[in-house]
Amino acid sequence: MGVGSVRGDLREVIVAAVSEIFYSIQGESLSQGYPTVFIRLAGCDLNCTYCDTVYARTGGESMSVDSIAERALSFSCPRVTITGGEPLMQPEACVALANLLAERGCDVQVETNGSRDISILPGHLRCIMDLKTPGSGESGATDMDNIDRLRPGDEVKFVLTSIDDFHWSRKIVESYRLYERAAVLFSPVPGMLDAETAAQALLEHRLNARLHLQLHKIIWPHVDRGV
Image (cartoon, rainbow, N blue to C red; front, side, top):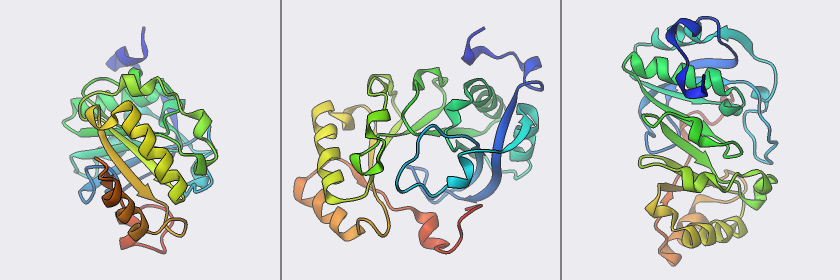
């Protein structure tokens, strides 16, 4: 049985390590600004220089897919983001959970760091994939074959630590014509690359990408979890 074909009667026995489940404003992606339920799965295979969820790299509470879904549905919110950590480190649980929530009427998107094959995600989901820049310290971890696996509605995010990251990302976008495959987001890291510099660079190079600021950090600058 493939990852994308988990039967409903198995969901109650499939478990995942969960870091947190919470209801907040979506701070990232093209769904930015919408009330959203977040399911943060624990565990990550990367160690980015700017990581703001170090607590999710290990540990987590063991929960069945059914239990996770019921908690998420208890917020009565139609939008759900499965994130991490790195959710594709738990592929069977991630896919089963996403399918279950979609069956229950939710609009589901999955955020991934780009190091693992995104083709396991069912076509009805939106994938928001990081493409790691040199400043992340993990640029070599990106599975570049994922570019060819992108589908209409997916998004690619470049997290920028410097103007050098911007120019590296610009060359990737242009050489792969990424804007023809997915929405392209350029997200400067607060305290490392200021938004004005990133904005001016986008304007100067007339790049077909969107300046992407983390809205939740603007709203709640001193809150580290649950936003």
